[in-house]
Image 1: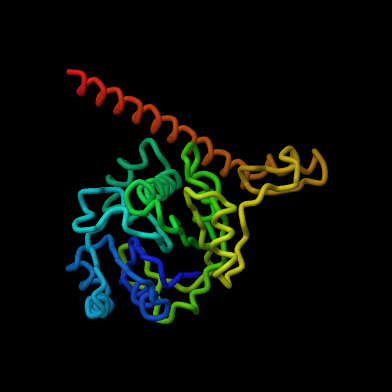
Image 2: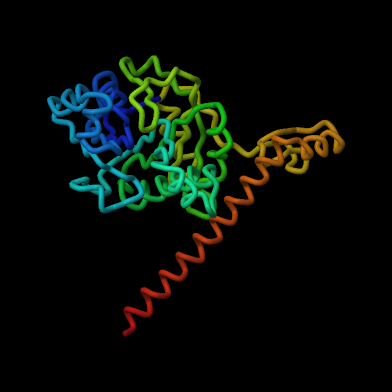
Length: 291
């Protein structure tokens, strides 16, 4: 992960704060603000607060109880003051009970809920966190295994927005000594697995390429237009090119494709409801202003 020393960085949901502490020590951004979902008391109970104390000693702002989807939890965070926002290995918090799970998943699958979390993260990055005159980069690092690969991070999250998917690069955890990937709601260290960091921006692909190519030593797979005809691929599963129509039909009949197709349909339905709710809210606001 390339960090320009001139950048102002915001980390989101950083478990025990070990990523933020390592980033500050070994990459030395101009400014770092670190946030965690847990309260300070919960942090101390689950992990201890060693990294919290380290960051405090370096005059790094740390905000606890930070929910990236809820503005009421952002406290003293100064908006529109960052160049880069980073969300490492995001995942919905564990459900508190079977009843809570059933209530949340009555109309949406866990797959959809995780996509919704990341979509709201991206929207809020560009609406509230990132400075329009800065680098304007939102990063998501995720594991290359199920269920994370089933979230369609490259294509689904920014659908129907002005946000551009720029590309991806392999996340090298060795460049962040001391960083421990944590389980959600548990104090166990997660066994390291290969991860990928996905890049988003309101800036164009060409602008971002110029920025990275001139400074970064990371190998980035940019979101370039494929030369493979769409009809010879499966866009949902990101598979192809198929050698023949028969091969494609065989793929469409697989369990893997059927599952991804179902997830895609659920996500499409979610986005339709989101658009309806946004339109309704806008109409209500307009009506209120006219009174």
